[in-house]
Image (cartoon, rainbow, N blue to C red; front, side, top):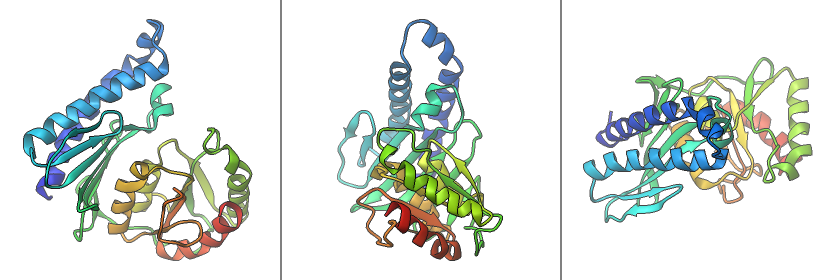
Length: 262
């Protein structure tokens, strides 16, 4: 394990303990009059501070940028991008499925990435050119070639951001169901994409994702042998639309997504 991944893991584990403990008293906090958004902001900020503490201590020359606080340390070496709670809706409902994501960039390119599930303790990570791992075991994408008996991951189009894509999303799900596939829906795009890297899911796609939502898991997926691209097949992900899949299944799904969501 590379030194920066080791430190990232230490930082994320500490934050994970804090998140799980905070989520256990979520109902109490709501009963005290706090809104779900207020609880999320408080816990996410606390988790970010925990992660930043470990990173600052180990790498004072690195820039550190978090989702809520922005840039909290300026350095002249690489940059850490931290999202302490991805999956805000599930977290706010007291459900599992939120994850911590961390990326380390050098000259704007990802060199190391981590996705950690505080509830299951699953730790997905990768370093450039060294493959991808889940809980210290090497992972690879699935070998699926057709949609029969595969499992894919997608987002439920129930937010303002995804509502315009509702008909297209359900059209894709209808098409793949008719060919024998099953789908799971998840609030955290990073967890879906990381599970594709591990071969637990055969494919997943995200709609209008922010860069920080997909940066770490896509790097891990690439190191695991997955393919990913925009719905039009372009390597550019500026629109935030991305399909990630095993190489053979990628070619099957891409035309469907381009037709209904492109």
